[in-house]
Image (cartoon, rainbow, N blue to C red; front, side, top):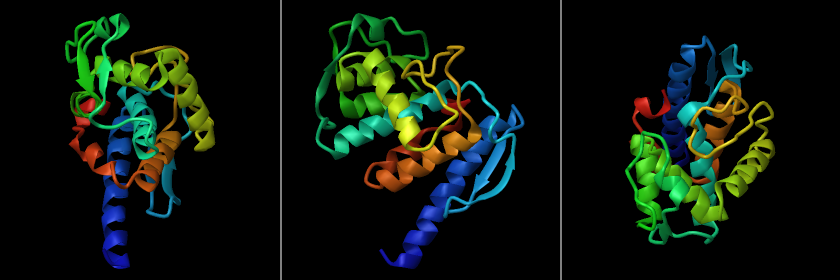
Length: 196
């Protein structure tokens, strides 16, 4: 792909993500628009701490993409559903304890329908427990410069200490594009309601 085509493609992707981010945070009057270079063009309440809800799953998928890229996971690997995952609050796929699901199907379920049980299965499959996975989420958030973000779970279910900002979520979205161009095509599968 030529440089111009790559620039146009990534600019379109960034614009799409920024529109999504702006739409989600508009309800709290926080907006943020970034150019393809990462420069802030307009911001309103971009540093206001908010509850991320299902936007949390963007960090979950970031770590899963990282595991796929570096060979710690494969899309065909079967993950075992734990009791905790099977008891997650909706929305959920309805996975049963002891059942197996592929990494690919869990990622698609988490991104397309925002299934909480899929997010927990992925977290446990990658780090043996959601608690360990959350430690990785917070470590990676700091490494990505998301200094106003703190995670408490992989699914985005409400927790009073789980917070982020529009600015930090924009950083995460750009990191997903930059670090995982081979997997980024999964994200457009996610409809707006996943992140509302």
